[in-house]
Amino acid sequence: MKIGIIGPGRIANTVAPALVNTDCIDCYAVASRDLAKAEAFAKKYGFQKVYNSYEAMLRDPEVELVYVATPHSHHYEHIMLCLEYGKAVICEKAFTLNADQAQKIREASEEKGIYVAEAIWTRYMPSRNMIQQTIDSGIIGEVNTLTANLSYDIDDKERIWNPNLAGGALLDIGVYGLNFATMHFGTDIERIESSVRMLDTGVDAMETITIFYKDGRMAVLTHSIFCRSDRKGIIHGDKGYIVVENINNPSSISVYDLDDKLVSFQEVPPQINGYEYEFIEAAQQIAKGEHESKSMPLDDSVYIMELMDGLRRQWGMVYPQEK
Image (cartoon, rainbow, N blue to C red; front, side):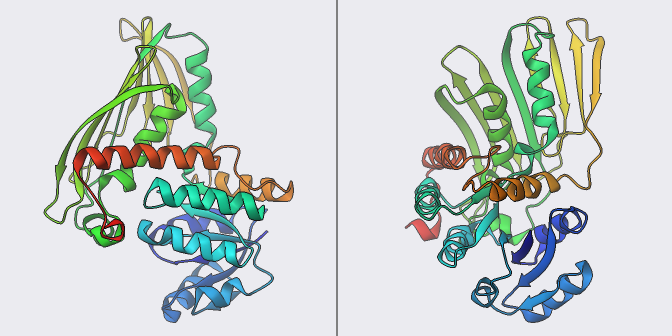
């Protein structure tokens, strides 16, 4: 499947090795309003075509799938542009600015029958099923609590501190904590409480999020832009606990009993860089004529945006585009 990239920046450069080394993907075109940037990217990764406008690339009939790798603030505009030109899309997380935008994209995708998916890689990785199978096996008994943290020293990045780019910890890294909790504890939520520290620019810098489930379970999530955390996800039961190393790209799953004795250990299968799974699934789903992902259906993308909208309402955090 011939892929075109909108926005050959940091994340596109991170993802590119997976595209180059995935058999079902043909690295075809790249578009940037900075032509030199597009040319350098194409040369580095072997893309065939270079365009200095997104519209010009989207008019190319050879482009079958577009990877949107621009800032959060531009995802809605660029996904809708792709749909206008009839192109399938896989868009970086966070999917959009807010749930209203996500809902409009879902409606447009359904109306046009064109594939759209959010590229949140942890949803597509084999580790997701490995973790869930470990929980479902009963090895830690009745599960009642989940904790997860994800923090990086990224407060100097403009995409983080600038509200015009939909910055803040929540949409950039908090989305992983929320996905980790909802993947493994579900969405039957009673209420969500949170605490936040804001930057002077008006975006969130650090937060704790406590999710109370209707069945009595609880998930506690922590995110920060000031330091690198251990990034562990821990799932607690009445017979032991599961430790997932790095919720942002799980490397191993360890199970301990109540005496803290290691009783099970699994390494995640080797991967190119982890991003390949979302593109493999996109190619498979498009080939079947499907308009959304199995691993991250559009309903789930809308739901996660609704959760983040609710948290931002608690904090009084509004992006300039929403005013």
